[in-house]
Length: 285
Image (cartoon, rainbow, N blue to C red; front, side, top):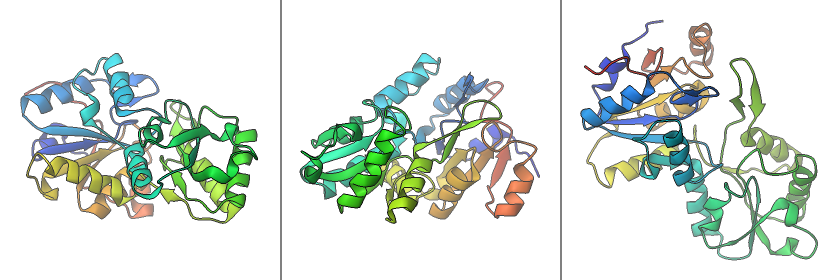
């Protein structure tokens, strides 16, 4: 397994797409040295965007969380979240009624901005259940895992409505060795119980890359060959970008550990174009 020089790789591209967790930050904070990466991108006049399955907060809130950690060059315009695709779907397909959601009030930003009436699943009862025209699964926090998940199951048994998964991640790391169940994992469980197919937005689905590509091309004439996607997970970041035709870089600071990387690549057949230890630059050339 050949480890490439990070700076020499990104110098070949005009636009860099970053995954967030495991690439820019982890449970400890920022990946050491990542600030210099963004200094370099600004110095070289390269465009950069965070392509994230995190639908727990608005782009403004996500950018503020990076700023609070000391990464000042990221603002809301640099964030492309799967929640934005969920909002686009609701704008086009759900015209009225109630949108019920699992998640925090912050995560509900995406559906509230669509102008629809929104209620947490906990507030759905026999007086309003017939007005519910969509269910959106946004975040793994902000609800009662027993009562509200059961209510979501029964809502979907009683109502023929779309169920939208705004974050497709099944798990997320909370320490070096441990993970927690993410909303994508909860969605898979509910989906199997009710026997319905949910609408999923986010990596590895190509739609989030189409959304990001169209956004970049709205102000910068680039081709796919000029864009690099950097991620830490083969089954979301790498395969999703590969399917869309982007070059990919796997970094070993997140869910894919250095000791497991070669075995995972061989067993899955998911092959990044480059492998780097980190997305951090030790110094600016």
